[in-house]
Length: 181
Image 1 (cartoon, rainbow, N blue to C red):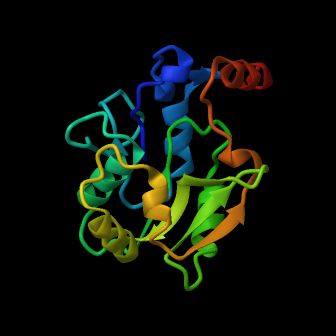
Image 2: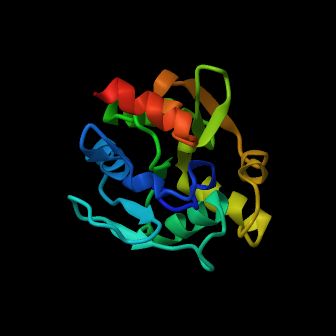
Image 3: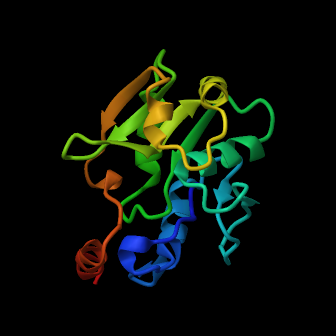
């Protein structure tokens, strides 16, 4: 789970700590992963209501691709498939994660697609071996765009509607807070 970032478009707010109806976005994301054997949270340590493994990209602030690489490196050996999600997805639920896992088929992974047709690589399921190979071809992930990774993988796409909507701006936050009350 990617739970870092600077929240620049939100005035520097800690996005995973934002609350909707009394629950942090990080807790909402963690609830969606309740059936996972291992949960790795990449970002600064925060209080959470379940056991997780913490990791950080080195150096911190390297962007989502560096966070993805750090999370992959923190997984135990033998993990066949890894689900990746950002901690700023207010509508994420376990059912979405399970749908991604079912949709992999023979591809390297499956990436969620929002209602506008945009791929959301931080809401996806990837075959761990394919993800590792792709990251190795990229080299140093710090500061690299996610599209470099996507261009090296054979990915299926799955439309997941509002589950792929994230909170990036004050307007996004206000809309979700209004809907949560």
